[in-house]
Image 1 (tube, helix red, strand yellow):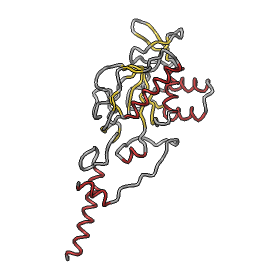
Image 2 (cartoon, helix red, strand yellow):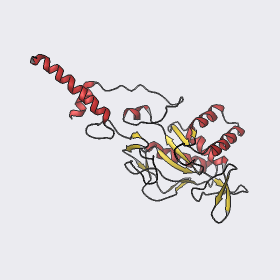
Image 3 (cartoon, one colour):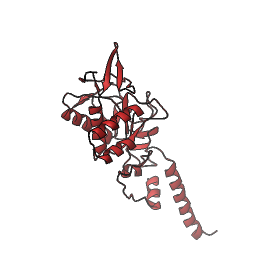
Length: 268
């Protein structure tokens, strides 16, 4: 075979190899310079440029003060915004925020997910049996009757008003894009019933019903919201993966790189 034919074939082979290599890369590296932000799926991913949630802020405080406090900037902003909104509308409210993720994502000791910067656990708001708001002391399980057993043989009730307001704020924030709120079926049913009793927009209630989900592979989440944000179109192009795209989430056309651009990026 002459050199005139070998040249184009060699170039084509290089492009194919580059494309195959890029498809196999799962984390930011010199071989995948376009990856960044939330990369991979929540159960097997990493995160770059994560932000840290402070121990305290307007309307919230962290349950633990360890290093499992990092998340995608949109996630951290969503938590801060939602907590401040609830506190503004229900003065004195404190949202207790449990785990986010590690600084660079990856495996976390207490979680199978929380690895790509898109997950956070938010403890449910509680009230006394007489209706007085109290700060959640921790992961207290809410039964089918809405009651939760506290230490020293005391009881509380899930505060449907503030817990729904929290979910509502997350769902209606234009910059958040909630993919899932994992919570037990009984708690979901109480929240949906409460939302309908308030006369909420049926489309918003439907949206809540879509994202509320009791996990099938872990605890029922009867003591907290496990909130997961979705990938934006731009983030999907940069390596963010996993979960459904909701009907109300904006879709954007992302121009894929040309073979030449891909090859040049790898050769750099």
